[in-house]
Image 1 (cartoon, rainbow, N blue to C red):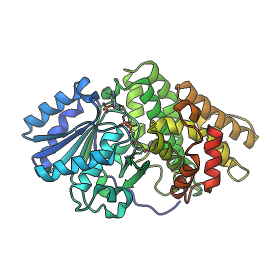
Image 2: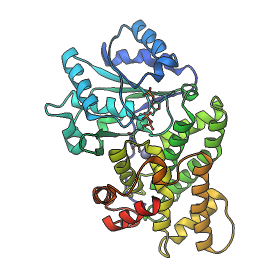
Image 3: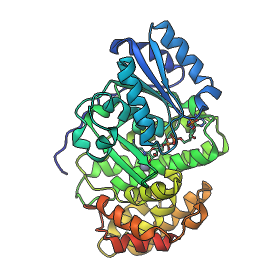
Image 4: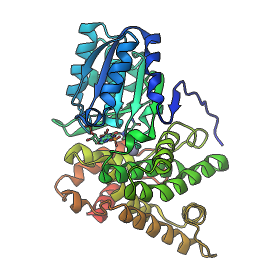
Length: 384
Ligand code: NZQ
Ligand code: ZN
C-alpha cells in the first residue's frame, strides 16, 4: 500500500429532512449565490423549501440558474461575475454533479483575477475559493464530497476536469427522497457513473491494498443490488439511500488513497461528451466493457478473476474463464439498466475518433494498463 493523506472537511447531513441544516450557511456570511440547473429543483419543491430556510436565517440570495448538464465555462463566467458584483460570500449548489461542478469553479473564479478557464486547464492556479455548500439531488458524480469539477467549452469541443482541496464542499445535504424524481435514464447513468468510479480505482497495480479493494467490492455489490430497484421503484427509499451514499464514498478518497492509479475510462468518455454532449454515465456504460476487453491479458487476469469471484459471485478454477465472464456480467448489467452499449446508439460515428483518441491519451498516462493513442482508437472502434 502507498503512503497517503486522507482529509475530508465536508460535513454530511444524510437522510430525510436534513435540509433544515441550510440555516448553518450563516456561519459563512450573509450573501449567498444559489446555483441550480434547468428547473428540476423548482418542480420538486426543493427551491421553495431552500429559499424559505435561507430567508429565515437572514441570508440574501442571488441566483445563477440554467446550469447545463456538462456545465459550460460561459455559465461559470456568468456566476463569477455575479460573485464580484454582489460581494458574494459563499455558494450553494442545489442539483446534480453539473450544478455542483459549476458552483465549485464559480467559487474559485470569484477569488481569481484571470479568466475562469485558466482554472480548468491549470488546477495549480486554484489556491482559494468561497465556501461551497451543496444539496445533492442526483446520485452519481460524488462531487458533493470530492475536490473535482468538470467543465466544458463546447465551442472548442473541450471538456476537462480540474481539482483543488478548497473545492471540497464545507457541507453537503444528502436527502435520498430528493432523488425520487430523477428519470430512469439519469438513475441508470448515475449508477453506471458510480460503478465506473469504483472500477477505475479497483483496477490498480498497487499490491496489497486489500482494505481498499474490499471497500470497492462492497460498493459494487451495493450498486448491482440497488440500481435495478431504483429503476423499477423510483421512490424506494432504501435503494435511493444506498445509491446516494455509495456515490459519495466511491470517489471521496476512501477507496483510492494508498492504491493510486490514473483513471482511464473517464478521459476516454470525456471526449465523447466534449464532441457529442452525451450523458456522462451513458458514455461510461458503453466504454467500460470495451476497455475491459482490451485490458484483460495474462498480466491482468488475476485481478479480473478477483473481480468476477468477489463481485459477481462467479465460481470455478479457471481464472481466464472467470475473467471473461466478469466482463460479460458487467455488460449484461448495464443492459439490464437500459443503458446504451454501442457508440452508434448515442449518435457517435467514426468522424472524430482519431482526434478524440489523441486528446484522451494525455489523460491516461499512468493507467492500470498502458494506453497509447492507437490503443484508445481501437477501443473506440470496437465500441462503435
Ligand atoms: O438541470 P436540472 O433541471 O436540475 O435537471 C438535471 C439534468 O437535466 C436532472 N436532475 C438532477 N436532479 C434531478 C434531476 N431531474 C429530476 N429530479 C432530480 N432530483 O438530471 C440531469 C443531469 O444532471 P447532471 O447534474 O448533469 O448529472 P450528473 O450528476 O450525472 O453530473 C454529470 C456531470 O458531472 C461530471 C460529468 O462529466 C458531467 O459533466 N462529473 C463530475 C465529477 C466530479 N465532480 O467529481 C466526476 C464524474 O466522473 C463526472 O465526470
Ligand atoms: Zn464519472
